Amino acid sequence: MSKTAVIHARIEPAIKRSAESILSRVGLSSTEAIRMFYRQITLRKGLPFAVEIPNATTRTTLKASRDGKDLEEFSSMEKLFASWDK
Image (cartoon, rainbow, N blue to C red; front, side):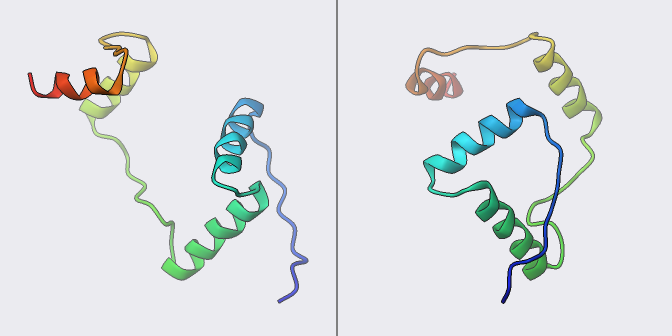
């Protein structure tokens, strides 16, 4: 099939850089990732992930996180996992 359709999208530069860094680590270009995303939309006849409106608790938690409140930091994954057992 001929690949002649073009998609133009504007995105924040920091998000683009971050996403492209991740994509390159898995060996994908932005074009390949977009192509995969569109293929999944077509195959699933919808978005390939759940899109939900967050409830009040989730909204409050996300806002607190963005504001830097009630955060915990861990120096290693092991310490993070150990904190779950408390």
